[in-house]
Amino acid sequence: MQQIRAISLLGYVEVAASVGLDGPAMLRSVGIPNEALSDPENRIPATLVAELLETSAARSGREDFGLLTAERRVFANLGPVSMLLTHLPNLREVVRVCIDYQRHFNDIVDISLEETADSCLIKLALEPKLQRDQIVDQTMGVAHRVLLGVSNGSWSPECVHLTRAAPRTRLPWQRFFAAPIEFAANCNGFSCSREALLVANPRADATMALHARRLLGFVPLDAGPKPASERVRRAIATLLPAGRATLEQVAAQMAISPRSLQRQLAGEGCRFGDLLNDVRKELAAAYLKSSAHPVTAVAGLLGYASPSAFTRWFAGAFGNSPQAWRAAQAERPAPQD
Image 1 (cartoon, rainbow, N blue to C red):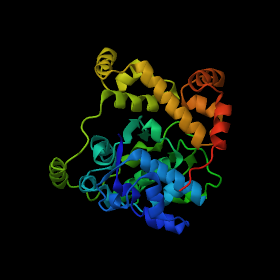
Image 2 (image 1 turned 90 degrees about the vertical axis):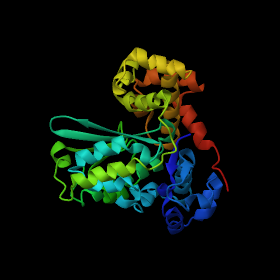
Image 3 (image 1 turned 45 degrees about the vertical axis):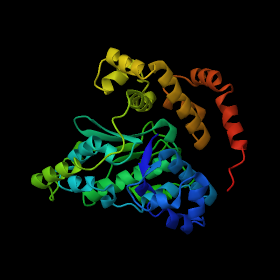
C-alpha cells in the first residue's frame, strides 16, 4: 500500500475551516484518525489522502483546495533531507539528490530529470491510482515551494505542466506558480533552461553535505525496495502519453534488459501486458471521472494514436463507451457524512 507522510496534511484542519468545512469531521469521513496528524512523520495510506482532498474540494466548491494545502508547506517540512539540499552546489544537484532520496518523502511520486543541451524537464510521476486533480495540485505546489526555498527564490520555471484539466478560473494557479501553465499536459513537471539549474548556490558546503548524507543513513525507512511490478507500473504511466510504454522502453528506463525484467515480473506472478492494461484502466477511470479532459485528450494520454482505437479498447475493458461511462459516473450521488 502506497503511503504518504502526515506532513502532507499540515494545516489541513485550518485550511478546511477557512473554506467552511469541519476538518476533523472530514478526516473521520475518509477514515483518517485525527491523531494520525500528531506526528508529521506518521505514514497515512495515500488513497485516503487523495480522497480527502478531492472530497474537500467538492464540498467547499474550491477547485484550488490542493493548492491551498500546498501553501502551508515550507522547505524545512522536507525533514532531514532539507539539511542536505541546503548545501548542494546548484539546483541540478538538488533534483538529482531528490531522485536518490525520494523514499524519504513518500511512496507515491517518482521524480526524474530529462535534459537536453539547453533545456530541462523535472517530472513528477504519480502512482496511476492517484492521478486526481487535488493531489496533483498539492504535489506540484509542494515541489515548486521546495525548489523556490532551496534557491532562495531565485529559480522560476519557464512552464508548469499539469495533467489536470484547466479549472474554471486559472487565477489561483497563475498566482501560485507565477509562470506560464500548461493544463491537460502529458506529464506533471516543470520545464526550465539548463542554465537555470546550474546557478551556483552561495550556501553550498561540500563538508556539510557529506555530513548530511551520513546522517540520512541513520534515518529509518519503513518501506523496503519497491517491487519490480510497482516500478513498472510507474514507468508505464510516465511513458504512455508518448506512446512508448513498451516492454523494451520500460526496461531501458529501469536500466535492465527486457528479458531480465520479464524474469523479475514472473517472480512476482505478473506479466507486462497485464500491468499495461491495468495502468491504462486506472488512468482512464481517473481522467474520465475526475477531470474535464475530452475523450480525444484521454486517448492521447493513454498512448492511443486515434480516439476510435481508444474507444474500442475502453468498451472492451469497461463494457461501455467512454462518454456513456463518464455520464454514468456523474449521475452517481456524492458520498454523505
